[in-house]
Image (tube, rainbow, N blue to C red):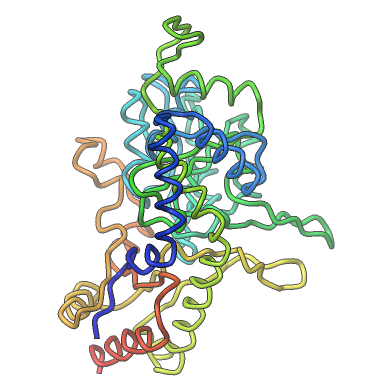
Length: 391
């Protein structure tokens, strides 16, 4: 049996007519940049995320970049973030001439550890840290209550890197009340990626910035189009970060199905958990499945607390298992083999950091197929082959 890591063809078969119609309408309109499709997507994504404003941009990377630009992050500044994420989280900081400062991750959620954040801020005697970027990794929110509390103490803005987490929710608990808020609605800005492999993936590159503040939204809109308003009059230097109308049209079709896809991924994650438990792999310590760490006040998990952009297991002999699975035509991937604080592009600065939890995760974790169209038989085959490897 062949089990791909992701099967976009299976998704396309169900949506072909709707996607073809939406794209054809854009072609007929000849309005290919910004326009009504982009405006429509911006409103729909903002509403979905619980934000007042959405600004479509050219990629998730550019969403992060333009958010930092809007906060006037510049050369000599520092930005506090996680060492364990896709490179874009750090790359945008470096592109602005700023310096990334890292706080290690929580070993269960793989997200930035708020207490390690506090330690990094306490060590910042010169007050060079000007912003914080937590990442909602693999489809589960970082510990935003603690992160926002710490950020408020230090009067620092928080940009949510929600590239993998559209629709994921986090509980703010007040006594016997719990309010679940969606990724992208909690910090000063939320940054999303519509890369095709995401839960809400386009037919090319695309991204979105969400925010609550109208003035910040206007500034981001200005920056995404070379800082021009009106046309040819530039009050600031921005970039070409515009979202294509064809991407917006396709994403508007897909957005209607997003919650059902989330449910499918969650069901697949739960089936994996059960199959691993029945196999004895968890009890033996060979496999540690992912955990949905957030509960409500009654101890009940919100169905959207983890949207499983990736299903990540922590295993012994990770590289050997990866090779075995690939040999048996089972798709898998290492996210991420080199933590950001160890990347060569940091030069000598890479020698300054010790992030043991991030380094351990980079050496032990593996992503398994979890897309909604995955069948029970395919998941059973995956777990059976993992069990065979460890026998």
